[in-house]
Length: 305
Length: 247
Image 1: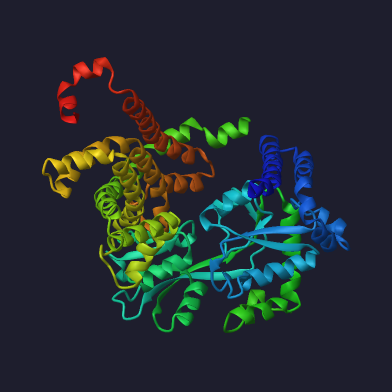
Image 2 (image 1 turned 45 degrees about the horizontal axis):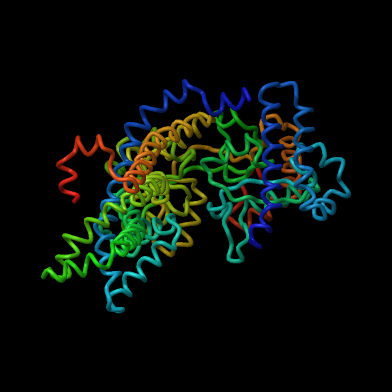
């Protein structure tokens, strides 16, 4: 009984939150000229939830409150960032239970410069785009390749990382390159560009979809699949951390660029993020963060001036 | 509201999704659930019989098993079986991921069905066993011919509920990784939904589940009524053979 009473306000809160979100979504989608009223509805809807985290939001937005208000954030002074936090070294849950990684550090740095608190929400990669589009997050950072298809439903900041795809195999595997995949079981992560590429190019392999990169590599090390096809930096990380159990068999030049995703109509936030990103690159902070997570030189396009 | 209709109930998208749902999704969902429930029925009955033993050391393993598999979230059991067993070198089904999923669901349903059978058997009046034993039947023979047939009738409604629960839980099997052709209903709906940015494929998948579960629920209700009120006069006239077997 006691527990039921304690939960009641929570339910009420959730209901209010949902109602506000839906209304906002309705307005934006049915009437393109109604961006203003959509923001109004959103801030009204959130006012109930805001009480919950008032002290935090206030301290975060005190000095730059005006600037932050222009960013179209669901909750002023705080940016809610969706990420599939199972993609080391870009994002993963550290030993302390907190999100870590290159994307996490970069996003935190950008949010700091925007004068807003950053909060990461762990979500599934293959639903991350629809969740962003429906207003679950203000932004997403998750090693996301900028593609035309994705740009139909969301908007991206300027690129912040260049990556190719790679083929990872177990030690002593018979698969030594992308030519040897006939009849092999190839693990990919659901919703990724790696899946799209593999489906198109490796037609004689059986493509097996896993919900996370961790699950895909787990299946590789337990011998349930012959290879994993995923972003090169993730393969490199697995090769290093697996102690010889995982090897890189091939690199596939795809020239993909990662971007930070925002809602399609929120150009203000995309521009603000791109501006801060350029500053982070220019003053060498990018290089510093890069050095924490990757070996080797920073690619020229992201090196400081 | 208009937007809601477009996002959730786009008839065109629903109709486009149905072939893939029925061909691939429904087939795999049924393979998973029917397989799991078959495992559950056989192993669950055995476990129930073990679980009502008078000797505590016979009862104990059954009790421990039921406690564990009824108490774990299905997704955890599926991960342990589908990802854990192969990792431990126990590749009992090679790379047939659906079979690992089926086994995991079967282990879960075994625990629930064992409890259903146990309750059913114990609900049969003690006097039945005493009477059967007094005419010279062994314990096992009395169980087989007298107690279990009566118990089975009583447990049909809860068993149908369990079938519905397993049918729905089969959607969790995606955690072990599914290749094209292996996806069950939810996964097919989700894939198409994510590609189209519309939720109608999810709704379409939901409709297929409902087409399975609602008739099953109705069946439970009818069984339940029939068990309480006895067969109707018409049914009694139409099915004398069945009745003769039951009595």
